[in-house]
Image 1 (cartoon, one colour):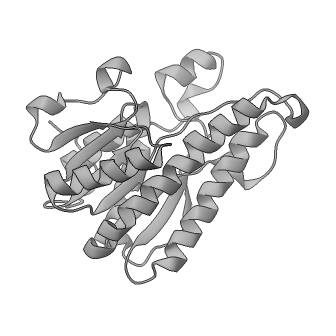
Image 2 (cartoon, helix red, strand yellow; image 1 turned 30 degrees about the horizontal axis):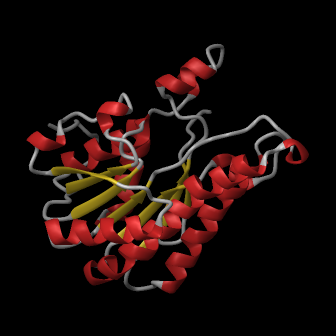
Amino acid sequence: MGVTTDFDVDFDGTVAVITGASGALGSATVDRFRAAGATVCAVDVVPPADADSSLEADPADEPDLAFYEADLTDEDDVAALMDAVVDDHGRIDHLLNIAGTWRGGDHIEDTDLAEFELLVDVNLKTAFLASKHALPHLQEAAGSIVSISARSSLEGGAGDGPYRITKAGIRLLTETLAEENRGTVRANCVMPSVIDTPMNRELMPDADHDSWVAPSDIADVLAFLCSDGAAVTSGAAVPVYGEA
């Protein structure tokens, strides 16, 4: 199975590791990379069936799709994950750091430490560990990393500071990866605003949903940034918020 896309990207013969694959953006990215011919290693802490995922296929039935359950905040788990991917598929060409979450509503003085630590772990630590342990294989393949930052990370704001802080960290991680791997691995990130998902529509029923960007449209940008068409682009933070 796959999706119809507006531009051609050829990932035939490549292997993509996509974290947060059971979520709305993650599953759209899985579908986009499979449509382009990649073998996709979909990674999440919960299987798609337990997350109401929109993954278009059962990994057990599709030779170009494998699901790996892993705690991406645990370094031993991440190291074992990357070793398993290479053992199973021989290489890693693309890493998509999509795992993440949002929390907000409180000012800093009212924010529980546990909430801050959760955001650091899920939004930033996962991307750091996945990048760290995928890099040796990405360097061999002259591959690419694309991570998910956020439009709100460009400035401070009231009520969701820890979220903004972790997503700003993604931009700095991206710039660091790009600088340290010049000429080998390209690293970029994208900055969504509100993504048009069923959960966000439920949380914000009165918002202008027509201005939100669909996960599939963001997945197109992720695919482009991993493609040869973006061969001269590394260290970028790309806006993907459309009219939102």
